[in-house]
Amino acid sequence: PLRVFFDRWGRFGEGVGFFEQALVSLDPAAPAHGAALGVVLVEQAWLVFRLGRRGVATSLAERGVGVLRGLADPEGLLEGLYVLGALRLDAGAYGAARALWHEALTVARAEGDLKAAAHALELLGVAEELAGDPAQAKARYRESLDLSAHLGDKEGMVDVLNNLAALLIDAGDAAAAEPLLRRGLALAREVGAGRVVPYLLDNLAKVAVERRDHARAARLGGEALTAARDSGEKALEARVLETLGRAALGAGDPGRAEGLFGRSLRESWAMG
Image 1: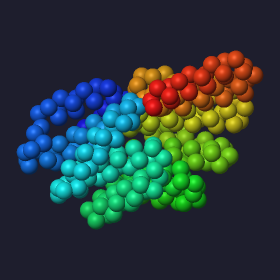
Image 2 (image 1 turned 90 degrees about the horizontal axis):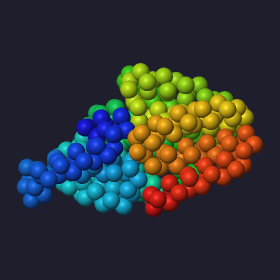
Image 3 (image 1 turned 90 degrees about the vertical axis):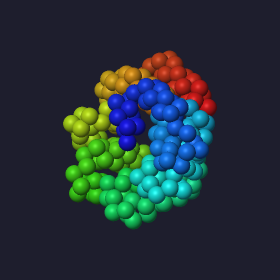
C-alpha cells in the first residue's frame, strides 16, 4: 500500500494530505469507486492515527472497513482490519482488537498470504500482551518471527523483534532483549524501515536504564527523540520523553527528570 511509503519514512502529514486529495476524486455513490474509497479511508486513518488524532482516525477506519466488508477485496479488507484493530487496542478494547486480528488471520490463511498471516500473528501478540497474557504473546511473536524469517521478510522481522524485545524488557530480562534490538536495528537500517528505528532506539535506551548506563540511555533516547519529532508521531515522542526522564532520574538529576516527565504527560494529554 502507498501508506507504507509515508509510514516507513515518517512522512505522516504529507501522506494525510495526499489521501485527502484522493478522496476528493472518489464518488461514494459510484460502485466502481467502492474498493478504492475503502482503501483510501483506511490508509488515511492510519496516518491520522500516527499523528495522534485518534477520534478522526477511528471514524475514517470504521467507515473504510464498512465499505470493504461488502466487497471482494481481501487485500483491502486486511489493511482495514489491521488499522481498525490498532485503534480498538489504543482505546483499551483488547477483546475487540483481538477479534479483528483473528479475522485478519483467517482471511490471510484463506488467501494463502503467508506474509499477511505473519503480520496478523504479530498483532495478536500485541493484543495478548496488553490483555495480560505475556506467555501467549511471546508464543505469537515467535510464530510470527519464524514465519517472517522463513519468507525472507526482513521488514516484517523488524517489527516483531522490537515487540518481542519490549516484552522481555517489561519482564525484567533486558539482557535477552538487547541482542534482539540490535538485530532489529541493523535490519531496519538495511531495508530502510525508518519508522521503526526510533522505537528500537527507545527500547535500547530502556535497556541502558536497566543497566544503569544512564549516559548511554540519554544518548540513545536523544536519537530516538529526534527521529520521533521528525516523523511528527506524538505518541512516540511522549514515550521517548518518559524514557529520557527515567534516565535523568537514574543519573541523579530529579529536576531534569521532572521536566521530561511533564513534557511527556503534556504530549499525551494533547492527543486526548
